[in-house]
Image 1 (cartoon, helix red, strand yellow):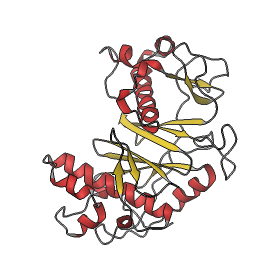
Image 2 (cartoon, one colour):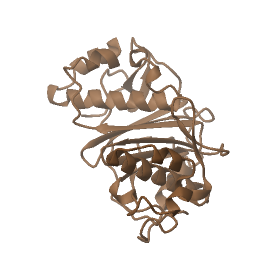
Image 3 (cartoon, helix red, strand yellow):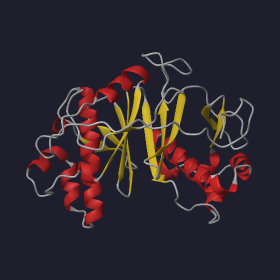
Length: 296
């Protein structure tokens, strides 16, 4: 799909390619040393103010969930872990929290166990006592996604790219009239994938504003304007100004990842490093397939 003109009504621009995997380091002995670096994440945060990273559950799961060091690494989340009974849910819970705290610790120059993950009403995670970094978390099956921003707020979401949504009535529950019309013009073999992408964008935006699924998805929409993903009203007219930035990418060939960042300080201006979050130069989420380091 070619990049749309400013006045072209379509779904989303083609997602950018993701970079090759890069190694990372351990969490307080719980995870094996792999001799890695978080420099790409830190550089992206310095340049744009936001970064999205992903990894697999298997790569971020300690060999022993009974390891006494896990309690210190998880903090208050360790009590929540004890109430989880399904093995798959326990594995994802532990791995996702270790990835999030390790990523945040690398950016902040703190050990992951020094950070306390807390939750707002509705379940939105935040770092207790830390205002200079906002975080978001999503996972599906074996993929974990973490969003980080030094701006105001961030939300991320991930779904299997081939999750069936079309023809089940989902589009009527998710899409605005404008989006329904835009979907009809998408090639049939790509239509379900575009609907999945719209779903993840709406999830990411709802998480960023702290509403989750409480915000009706038919009350706001997305479309391409000038090569950027824009928030739209149900009729397709612009919904907000340039203070919101959105990105959507295909990851590992199987998953769709979307992110939303609120940037009240810059609007359409570039970030501190001369770029805006998720601009045309973005390579997409950064893969961290091994283990997390504690510094950049």
